[in-house]
Length: 407
Image 1 (cartoon, rainbow, N blue to C red):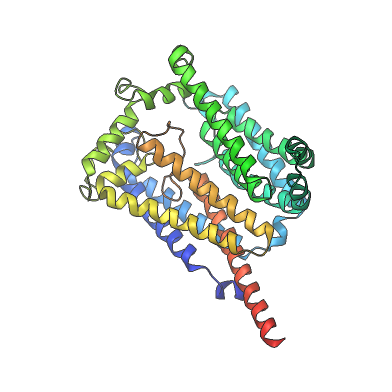
Image 2 (cartoon, rainbow, N blue to C red):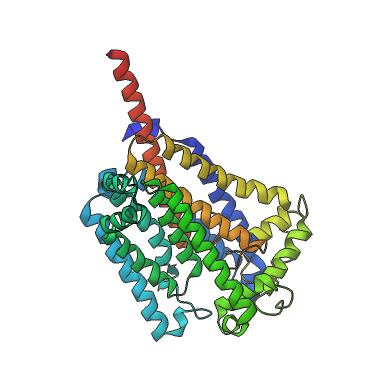
């Protein structure tokens, strides 16, 4: 495995490690006031937890990098992961019904294991990527043939028949995530599935067509609900979060509080920020500011410049992963890269959109930065997979080049 170290992609590894170190600093900074007042805990406890998550994540990243790629495609391993994930997703729903301690705001998303809270929805995102990359790469020829048909309806019908089993498993996982309810997780799974479908050979025009249709349908339904049936949304916690995006200051005392104070934090920070540790909104104004709204604290203390550098580093990692996928000679490798890049990018988009008030608050964390073990550990495994694929592809190109020179 020494060749993997020689072909290490430092343009992925260094930014990833930098974000992990930065997350420790910002989680401790953002959590200090909140946890001492609200939870009667010391900031040191959150420092220990986040450092543990980071160390565990880095360990899993290197474990995934040095693992045998063939293991990922073994049927017993892949279907074992699928079965375990579906079981955990169902367990979350059951626990949420029988014990209110396992749910918050009407949503059940985690399984307590000692001091650690396992979120199966986070695991599902990576499992779906591994599963779809395997299935779509094996059935690419079938998909390519049927999508090349001049009869569009026939083409889509044949494609659906060729991929019915995988889609049934995918839909089952998405429904279970939606029932938690985890709207953000559901939408992330849907986008990952769509992008990987299109990358595997589905018609791009057809894929964007369906995406546009779904977007119009969702926007139309939301507009109708807000204008004609506002009480339907107002009766549910998730619905009120959607309304809070449109009327944040009218709902500033309840669901709009987090968004309004996030806007104040961003405005207070300005271009260069008020200085690390000097933020005011984290001191009880923004609930749990070290989780999905940690970007508000970053912007207040380090300014718009700090926020841009943070998000820009994440986007750089995404761009690098996409480039690895484009250059990959193995279809399976390409699909893995596109899936992982989509996961990181869409999660970043949802988080940033919620913080600035452009998207509803769905509880999606900022990749590699926000407090939380499940998300960081899963994304670290994803980075390890990227490093594994990148090293393999780089080695393969070198071997091919040496072969051509000796020919």
